[in-house]
Length: 170
Image (cartoon, rainbow, N blue to C red; front, side, top):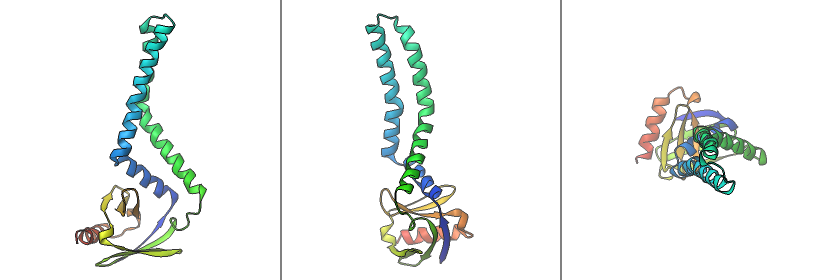
């Protein structure tokens, strides 16, 4: 079975966001930043009240308000930061082999992924995990990288997923 697809930088941004939202390490980091900062804000309010000989409530209310806003809006800021950094990384170097037209040929023992710059032979045993979302199928070859298959390019999505699952289980 052969599929052909085109990958653009936005596809890799999507993958990075998907990966971060599904990574225990990244989620732990997000939660530490999301909830640790408000604890720091409250600590600062207490210090200001003591050092400035102010009423605790007068300093605590603004910092509590800031803390609530932080907890609500920080994930959006975090994910926007990820998008921005991935875009910057794409501009840093040559990424022609990642972007553009790709072809993937599935075989019993694995698959061949090719583009204008070369091809890669991958055995099914080299795929650690298969994940998907509404837009992509991800064939993880390590804890942090995957082959991206955009569903928009698949006319036979069910057949492709079944073939991948049967190959990975071997």
